[in-house]
Length: 297
Ligand code: C2E
Ligand code: MG
Ligand code: MG
Ligand code: MG
Image 1 (cartoon, rainbow, N blue to C red):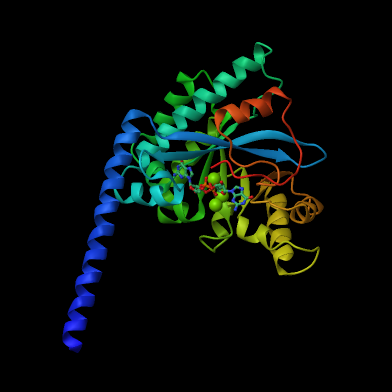
Image 2: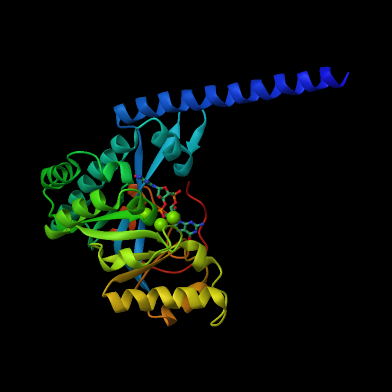
């Protein structure tokens, strides 16, 4: 009896595992195909200079994939799959190309008088595998030049974890690109590699305070504020810019600007926007009022 029940459970589990593995394999195949067709899209989230009104300074490119049958797949889900299937370099390079092409088109539209403003730069996320792949720096130079942009029009966002996994190789590539003008930001700062020593010798321009710290900023006191204050002051001491990620409420915004953080990115000002919606913001001068946002994705 017990044996039969146990056997049944195993069979069920087995099936579940197989179903999940099959689904993952199919997703990987579909993602590979979508990348080959250029069907993975890019949305842009404004990074603003706080104030009333806040002003768009730059944008972060974020990949978006809508599966033909399953609908939108969350980036963290398909990026994990892409990592396992070694598709991340293809994904990152696709997003880089699209982002550079879009920034170039906004610049020329602004020059033609069709847009009031255009972003100072576009930030692109790069994973450790992309960064340490042979020829990464040359690839970046080629894509930026082909779009008619300067390397200073581009910011690369890397995570602490990415840097820790292959610090030497990553540092070399970043140093090289940064010497030519590329900006570098440490993404999700405070969540990864916990030693701060690497900061003193990494070629870095900005820290992005992870949204887990911003989420708990409810008053002008308390531990979350202490952490945020420490990051802002660390950045200032090291001569780095600091961006607060994930600002959703006026309260968080007030604490953040009280700390002297010069750049904010979060749903309070804007969700990541499809191209057309970002164009509306650029057309109307890049001003963003704080307010509740209805999900776009
Ligand atoms: P990230 O680089 O830290 O990007 C910020 C994430 O926070 C985005 O999630 C964004 O939509 C979300 N976010 C922004 N403001 C708020 C807010 O106020 N509240 C909340 N709850 N969330 C907010 P998304 O687009 O789902 O991307 C997740 C992660 O996937 C990114 O985190 C990044 O690590 C990765 N990613 C996205 N695009 C790419 C890419 O092209 N290449 C690589 N390698 N990674 C990417
Ligand atoms: Mg990022
Ligand atoms: Mg981040
Ligand atoms: Mg993050």
